[in-house]
Length: 88
Image (tube, rainbow, N blue to C red; front, side, top):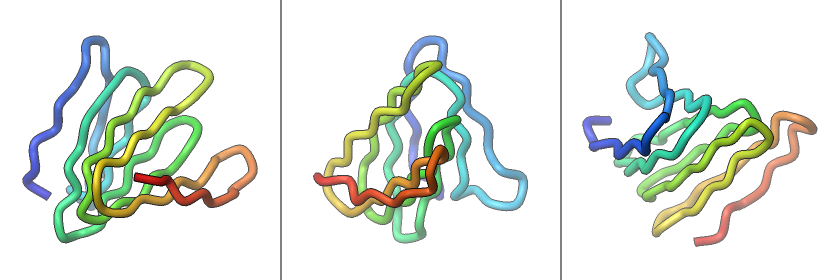
């Protein structure tokens, strides 16, 4: 979406070929700013959808931690496909 991405040390990300609004984070820490178009961030444990929010993610071997700053975001857990609204 043209917004900058801040990456922590030892972070591994990739982008979907079909969409600039889809990012895969497999380990490490990253901060994203979703623009007017929805952003989808996939991790080994979750799918996070966000609009007009800044997201901070920490992805480890066993978990994904997400903080939302402004805007809205939803997380779908991969293990059970449950959807969780992430509070800001």
